[in-house]
Length: 200
Image (tube, rainbow, N blue to C red; front, top):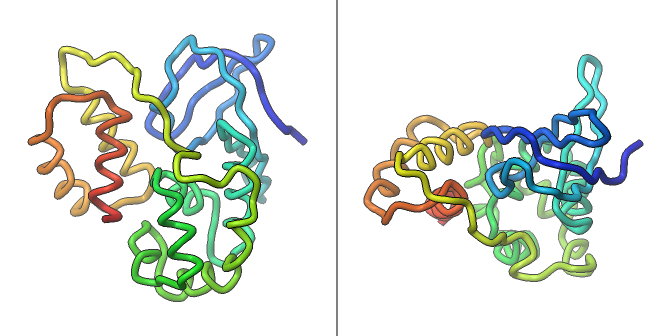
């Protein structure tokens, strides 16, 4: 039904953003809500997912990310939340390489992905991603420009975002101990580093 929405970001949470378009606020689940700033004008390419008791919108900053999301959804055992968690890791070159080389150990590091699903990802997507238009190492990386607050709420927001992506409390606690040692940063930076620590 929808292809893209162009409007103003009015709310940013660990799980979603709200984009206002013509006085209507759309709740959009996205890979990393903290890459957006409130009152920022954006264009989001959206995919509508319809289930028995829910209609949800998932948004992406470029059309290739949306295409990759849809390819992941075509894999048996992968739902929207799992697809977002996989896309949250900014190193998509490593993801594609893992799929092409059938590196199951890499794929099972993502939350909710067991060996069976990891094997299915490799089976279904091998040879189908490298030819996608726009695939490059920096495709999903974003500039870090959010202001740093005097309070370290950025770290807590990043940890909340990791939880929303499906990572367990034990893993998040382990990452938190490492992130506390890092120089103070914004939420996007903490989240990116946290994902790198989790995925390796």
